[in-house]
Amino acid sequence: MAETREEWIKKRAYALWEEEGYPTGRDSIHWEQARHERDTLEGSAASSDGKEVKPKAKRSVTGSKTNGVVTPAPKRTASRKTAS
Image 1 (spheres, rainbow, N blue to C red):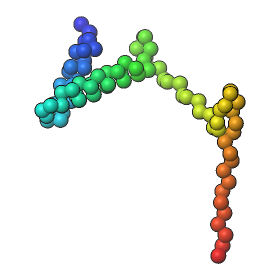
Image 2 (cartoon, rainbow, N blue to C red; image 1 turned 90 degrees about the horizontal axis):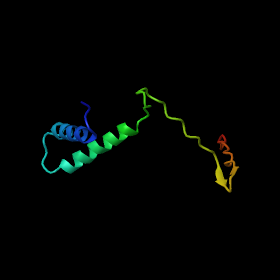
Image 3 (cartoon, rainbow, N blue to C red; image 1 turned 90 degrees about the vertical axis):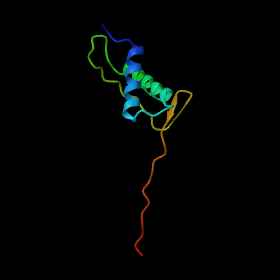
Image 4 (cartoon, rainbow, N blue to C red; image 1 turned 30 degrees about the vertical axis):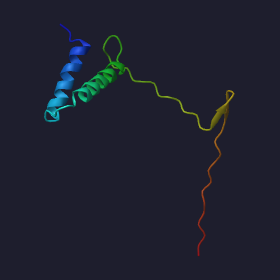
C-alpha cells in the first residue's frame, strides 16, 4: 500500500524532531519543514513514468526590456591604472 502525503509528512516531521534531540514546542516548525520538503519533492522534475526530467534553463536577457524591445546593457570598459 502506498504511503499518503499526510503519512509521509507525519513521519518526516517526527524524524526532524528526533534529529533535533526531542525539543519541546517545535512541532509546528517540524511539520512545516516536512510539508515544505514534500512539496519540493512533488514539484521536482519527474515525469509520469518515474524517469527524471531535467528542468529547462531560464533564458536571461541582458539589458532592459520595454514594450517588447530589448535594449542592450551599456558596455563596460576596463579602467587602466597609470604608472607612477
